[in-house]
Length: 208
Image 1 (cartoon, helix red, strand yellow):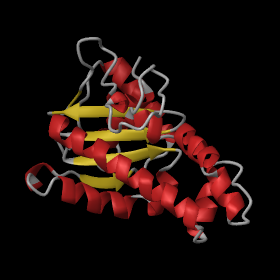
Image 2: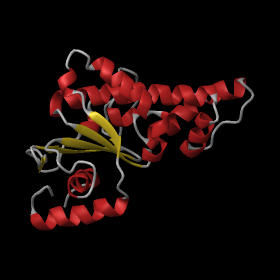
Image 3: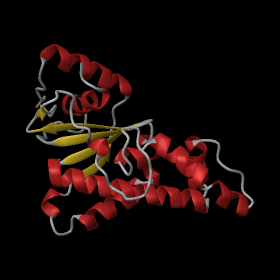
């Protein structure tokens, strides 16, 4: 069986924004960070057959512990779990400002959209870390587009503009490999259908 990120990548080629492309990537935000990669029209599954674990590229020297046992992985700073950690880390700052502490990432999003300084700073840092990860993905996989899927795609207004600008700066010496960043228009049901299709067909054949 394909994992959720691989199914999401297949869905983009079959039903979504990757139709007509040969190389793309999907990042699925949830409790972790899933990554699905398509190279030359084929799902990249690697020698293990499990697909790339690009959520475990180390992108920071900050001591953020990841579930894999390492520190500084992309997943450790780019997930719902990571946002919960950032809420806890900034609790004293909110209290110093006389503000209630957000109970969860959903409240953090509302605060950021309402102009809360601390919440906006958390998403600015999120954007920086995401840009670092995308820089690495661009250098290694050279996707034409990277799609955002999962729990945070509806909050892209809080990170996508800044991330796009930061990626352009990081890749200014190699603009030919700068990917277009795009929020997936597909829902979870498309990934489920595509996962079943890929499992049955054993390959990814892109629709024209």
